[in-house]
Image (cartoon, rainbow, N blue to C red; front, side):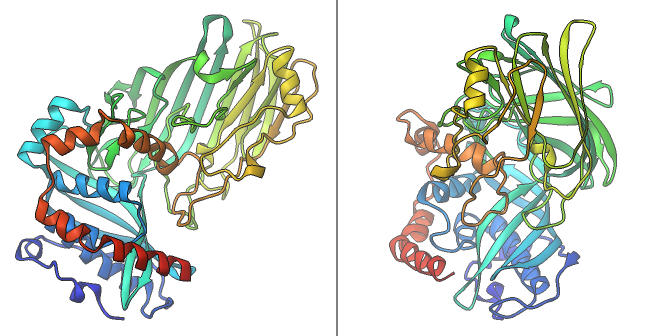
Amino acid sequence: MTSLRARSPFHSRAASAIPLLIAGIAVAASPVSGGGAPADLAADFSSRLVEALGTGTVAWDRLWLPGARDSTRRWHDLRAQALFQWSDLSVRVEEARALDKDVVVTLRVSGLATWKPEAFAVARSLWTLQLDERRESNRVVRREAWRLAPHGDGWAAVDRISLSPVRVSDLDLSVGIYPEQDAMLVGATYTLRSRLENLETLRFFLDRRAQIYRLHVDGRPVELVRGDELGSFGLEGFTPEMESSLRFPRPLGEDEEVRVEFRIRSPLVHMGDEGIVTSLPLRPGSFQVRAWYPIFAPATAAGSETDRTRIDWSVRWPEGAFETSAFATGPDARDERETVNWAEERVVEMTVLPSPVAEAYRSLDFLLGRPGEGARAIREGSITWRSRMARPAGDRLPSLPLPTRSGTVLRWGELVRPTPEFPLDPHPRSRRSIVDPLLTVVTASTRDLASELADLLPLDSDALDEVFDDSDRDAEQGADDRSAR
């Protein structure tokens, strides 16, 4: 294999001065199409990633297969990379494995990300910054996965996702539905184990109308920041109002365990339609993917061994408020119980045992039908749910032959939806599914984030010329490469 590091025209003295650590943790040794072993490709790509972060926008753009990103995603990637200067970088390889004709590389990346002066001034004035972006210089520790495809005599990136810096070993989820108060109350307690050393912050997704009124780590209140309506720019590129972050009381060591407790109130009107209350998407649009309880990034890229999470969750509502109910818990639910408590609430309790199901804790959903119209719609299968990536045949709820009598519980498995072409995270509650529709809306607006950035923080014209000079040819070449796969 010809080393892309040797071929790269962007190796600068500034980049070569950046300290680099590349250590293999778990790598596959079998060769892949195009020659070389995944371990060798991972080491080569790690050095190129360090070089790209230290050098700037052009080198970052050259990591990617032409045509792998649309123009919107490519532009936002360039904008995000132009906001920061990186130093003291290190990369550690967690895993490298073959996947079809490609290679998936999981990395631990750490470094000091410093806002460029003009960018920091604009960001503080206009945007809500996440907790790992709040200072002028921030120590960044993160995990990420890249999918690399053969390109010419080397390899180029076709997909990238952020991975969780924590393991979710247990989740205790309690949901209360109160139609008369137009409220849904959610209590979510996570047992988390740090995957990284000196982990200070943790990001998560949560529906924009959900209000967090309690957030404790090991019983101590912690700092929280929630995104704003217009979104912002930072380390992860575009950050919408659904993305939030918390700061641990002190930095966590690797394998250190903590309990994170959320208490959340959401308006019920946000969760229902025509006699139905549900966490499933009922209408197409920007907010169709529901993060109705806190959702973290995936633990691993698709196809890797995933963490196993024990889940105990319950849903309660006033007796008589709903006639039918259904719950999505995955195939490993056990000990389903249904009772009426002292407050005359019907309570359904379920346990999901640890299993190989990938990211099972991200797959919890419920659907309740009020007496009359809502229950009838469920029985007749006339309620539709749609996904941005759904096939026409897959946009209807499963046929649920639900009895009409109150209190009968029926459970269905995880809803399966089509995935994008390079699905490192194919889950319906992935960052791609949650953020990309919002990114499209922001980009299309006439008074949007892109306009503010173009006026206040113009990109270097020479860099743009170099990146986009051959864009038509690159897009055509990239389309040909992907068609050949």
